[in-house]
Structures are given as C-alpha cells and as structure tokens.
Length: 229
Image 1 (cartoon, rainbow, N blue to C red):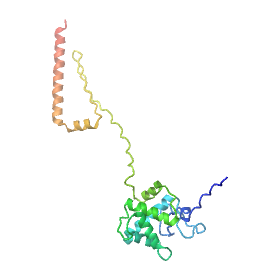
Image 2: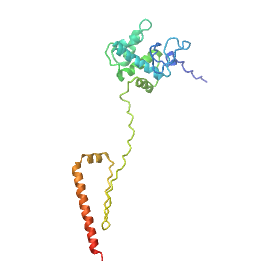
Image 3: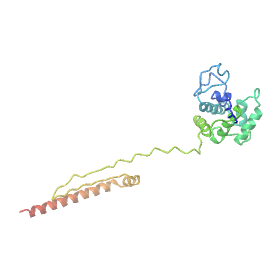
Image 4: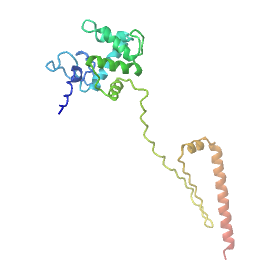
C-alpha cells in the first residue's frame, strides 16, 4: 500500500505570513505587523495574516513609485532584491515575463492589470510557489487600494417601498353627500410626473372642484327641504 505523501513544509515567507519576504524595519508600521521576536524570525517581518503580508508587498511597490520615482519592472525588482545578494537579472526577467512587458518599459504601478501579475510573480520567486488562491491575491491588492475592475459590483441594498400617502377631504353632508379624495403615489415615474405638474393649475383645479362640490351639496340640501312635508 502506497504511503500518502507528506505535505511540503512551509517556506519562510509562508511561515511568517510575509509572502514577499520584506525585511524587518522598526520604521514601517505595517497593518497586521507582529512584534519582532528574533528567536522566531531574525531578519524578516512577520504578519498576522498572509493577506496583510501581501498588502505590505503592494504598498512597498507603491512607496518605490511615489518616493523614488520608480516606474519599470527593472526598477522595482532591482530595489526589492539588490544584486549583492540576489540573481537580480533572472528575477527581473521572470517578473517582466509574467507581467508581459519589457523590463525597462514604463508601467502604471497603480493598475490592477500590472500589479496582479507582478505581485504573484514576486511571491513565486520568493517562495518557489504560490499557495494563495486567486481570490486571496485579489484581496491582498484590494487591501492596498487596487481593485479588480472585472469583479462583480456588490449589489445595492433594495430600497424600501415608499409609504402610501393619503389625503382625505372632509365630508360635506347634504342629502348624504360625502366627498373623499385619496392619492396613493408609489412608482418613481408617477412621482416624477406629479412633480412636473404646474402646481398653480393643480391648485386652481382643486379649488374649482371644491366650489362645484359645495354647490352640488347645497342643491341637494335645497331639494330635500322642498320635498319635506
């Protein structure tokens, strides 16, 4: 019976929740940063989650762009992994190939289409693999302010139906005459139509209707009095 293969051990970056292997610095108050403990990790930052560690990687690239004017893959990776301790040329080529641009091409490091493959390529180069799901990579970017434009928008909460408004005219009795006006407006297009009316004409029409109604009530009352014995 074949034995099940043991799960591969975590890499250093995975264990530290620091997929970009960002060096520790007391000057960087990263979101989710854990207190330094050299008995656990003597060199790199540690985070409370890989999502915050990935966010820090994106924010560090943003720092290169904003503070140092870096806007090429070569510029980013040469700063990220200096040649004195890395095969920087191979690193640059791997990331540029993943992003689909020339290493010296000027790119917009705020665009999702650039940063998504750049982040994933850095994680792959630093750890030899990418164990994070596409959704987790997107969340790392989102926490740094870079959102997938193709992601479905969160639907708005359904608006509450407007309450019906009822207006009643006082009953005018005369031979049992009762006048009641009820107005119920619920549909948006109907509300807009009512709002577009000239209220002067509307008030005038209501006034005329009131006069006619009063006259009719008086007429009915008069007939009732004449018919009484």
